[in-house]
Image 1 (spheres, rainbow, N blue to C red):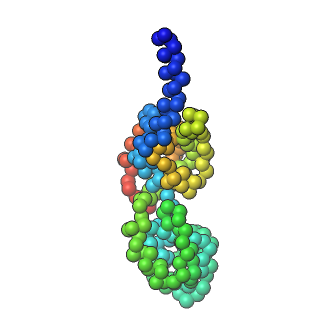
Image 2 (cartoon, helix red, strand yellow):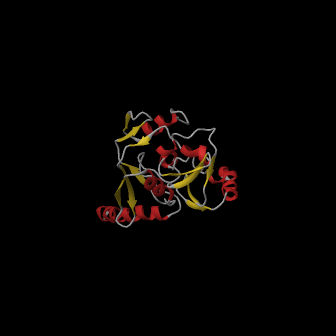
Image 3 (cartoon, rainbow, N blue to C red):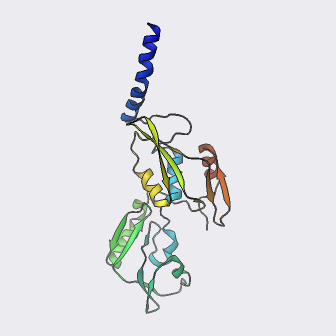
Length: 217
């Protein structure tokens, strides 16, 4: 009789495990498991958010950047800009005017069209409201990055390979309360001079980011 009951409990365990994922509270499987409100999830979103600060000389906005290509009037001369490298020769004393319409992309990769200086200034004034994620530009991820999330249909983890920041950010942004995932270690981070650091687990990842400066030039 004891063996019979034990067998029933063993058979029911996967069903009970799946039920945990259907509740509002996420199931914590072990120390490697993360969910949308985990500290490391927030830090990973900061690393993979769109860094909108590179063109602040043009738009004066830290929460979004202009999408290439676009046209600018530089000291009364019209020029088309196709990449961030094209902005390098510009100086603060240049007379810079944006030729509208332009499209902008926020830190969370939302895109919006802007049709006038008035519209642009209104968005700039709302940057503090838009900026829900603080970009962290001291390190970048060496791709691919592997994340494994729990599939409550077959009670197993499904593997995903990511090759750019946007896809990682949107994956994390769209996690539900009941979703859990794991990072496939080891991973490599590159600093601003492309020096590589290998990370082997969640705590090591958190410790490294916590010990880093909040902003890197």
